[in-house]
Each structure stands twice: as C-alpha cells, then as structure tokens.
Image 1 (tube, one colour):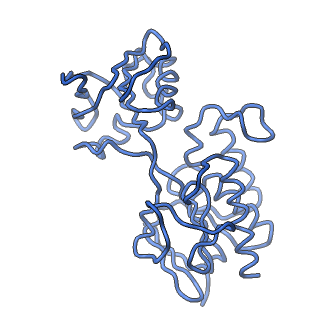
Image 2: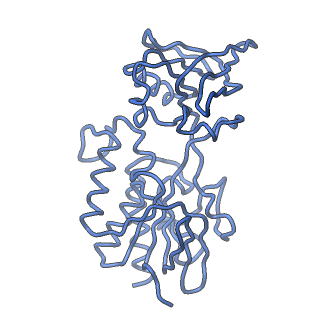
Length: 293
C-alpha cells in the first residue's frame, strides 16, 4: 500500500495547525486539508487578550502567524472539502471534492460552524447578503444599512463593530439588553426573523416579528450570530463515537478507532478556547507519534 501521507489533518484551525507543527518537526509526512481560510473560527475574533505571549492580538493576525510557521516548515497544505473518511486496518481513505488521499492516520480538527436560521432561501443568500463574520465582511457594507440577529454578547459585539463602518445597524435580539448602544444601532428586542426577501439573488429586506407584529426592514446585509454546531458531516458512515455531533476522545485525543484522533472545537469538552485547542492539537500529534513510531 502506497500512502500519500503518514497523517492527514482535516481542518486548519489552531488545533489542526498546531498538530501539523509537532508532526512535521518529528519528521512525519503530514498534510492539512482545509476548505476555507486558515484559522477557522478564530478569524471571527476581533480581540484576543487571554493568549499567552500577547497582551492583545486579533484572531486573523494570530492565525496568519501560525499559518506562516507551518509553511516555513514545509507542511503540505491542500484546499478541498472533505466528504468522507473510511477506516481500514492499516490505512485510511479521506475523500474530498477534489480527489482522495490514503494515509496511516487522520486527525479531525474541523471545529464548529455557525448555525443557520433555517429559513427558505437562506442558503442561496450566503455571500449574497448573508454573513456570519463582521470582522471578515464589514468592509463590504461600508456606509450601508445592515442587520445583526443573535442572542448573546457576541451578537452585540458584532453590532458595535459594524456600527463603526455602516450607516445603521438593526440588532434583532431574542431577549432584552440593558447596556447602552450607539446611536446608529436600532434595537429590536424579543425579535425574530421570519422571512428573507431577495431581488436578483441578493438580500433586499428582512421580515422581523416583534410582539406579534411583522415589520419589513430594508437591509444590504444580514449577520447571523446565533451560535455554532460541530462540523462533523464527513463522519457519517464512520463508526466513531460522537455526542451531539461532537467527537468523543480520551485524555490524549484518541477516538475509539485506531489511527483516528480529534482535537479542537470538534471534540466534546467543557472549555472552547484558543489555548485549549492548541494543547489538544499537540496531544493529538504526540499520540500518533507514540502509536506509530
């Protein structure tokens, strides 16, 4: 059996990139496959103030620094969407939309993905008016009217960030907000989005229900900030232990399948932080090294 790589890491977030660093430095033939930009969810974080070594750093900069590090080490980096993982006794097959790879071990580091509202036409409007990241996409809506829907402090933070760039921000919030917001933030407390309206395949307006009344609000962009769910679709058909979609691992990031490991926000755990993801990535790499070398 000729292998393409010793280890294939699925996901280029902080956990996946950390695992790659440890494996490459151990002279193991490792590759990362990622369908979006390196860094994952950290790219949506404006300020990080609890990561050792930095008093303050933004998520995209930290992710770019780590990406440069894996590039300098010569880690093979491939773009693609992983469709499935199959496990055999001596090897694994990872199938993507661009082909398949044979490897001895797999590290799953796919993290979490933003939740959707579940409304008609929503998927068609992704990148055509619908976004999940103000830090990423705010410049596209400079001096325009936008909307944020959410139910946590993160949705408030997104609205505040957008208010510095956009003409107005309508914040549709499921509960009540006590803090004072900027003048160009229009608050819709206990609100719910019930319909997305488009024109020529672009978002044009949103129907918002508050207190039993539906109001049509014109908007150029809608930022959906309602939480995350594990990105584990590619695990369907694989006999791997999961809990609510999150991969179950032992203390050393081993799954119930020999040669398959998981780390970062895709695993079932209590703390979802950059620092924990980095530690888990290192553990996953070290477990592979102990198991196969």
